[in-house]
Length: 73
Image (cartoon, rainbow, N blue to C red; front, side, top):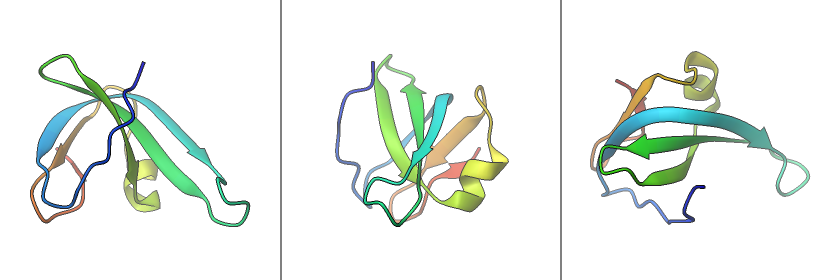
């Protein structure tokens, strides 16, 4: 189960995608999410861009560097 955690723009992490989802949380905008399993065994749920969401699949590695958006790694 993913732990609700606020990911900031200066955070850095990397892991493997375990689940993808999307939803219209506010009724008018589509939001894209991935659940990522980190190296320390923790899971986080992260909002990502539509372009990245369409290009990844479960099992892909995703990397987030400080000051940058998550990217396929």
